[in-house]
Image: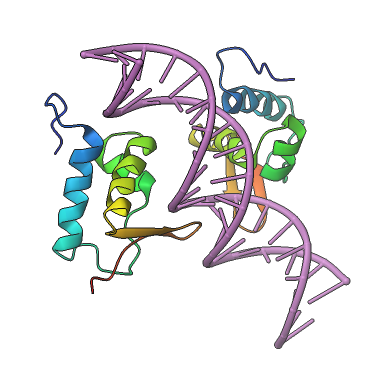
Length: 77
Length: 77
DNA sequence: ATGCATTTGTTCGTATGTATG
DNA sequence: GCATACATACGAACAAATGCA
């Protein structure tokens, strides 16, 4: 799944995978996607690393978070 | 009560104290024990930390939670 | 029966400290 | 020194279930 040795940081690798899942509809727009904790478990990293990956996608405008509810892919215009 | 400096995490210290109270009968089996909020107040931590301590005891099979009702020490066999 | 408070359980968001390369 | 990653802890918010007035 992840390249633990290579030069690419884990949070970037994870962001790339999540980005692909959003693009291909695995995570539909405005539907709750897996929590940071669930992502951390799937990839065997800590929540902090999962959050870093999600932060990347937020900066790109691909997703948004709602406290207490979850994280959602943004509807493309 | 807690060692704020030492190396042992707060949630582990709290779990140890609760574990002792269950063992010595302070919290009898199948009787509601203090809520996460009450535990947080007693030890001066946030509810999240109290929940982490309770989660530890759950993993050990020492207690179980019932949503809307409370947390209960498990009857030993 | 309707509403309200409490409780568990979960979420996001943030901050700090440690360790490693 | 800096970026990465882990672990811990705090804070705020939301949801579902319970119980009680």
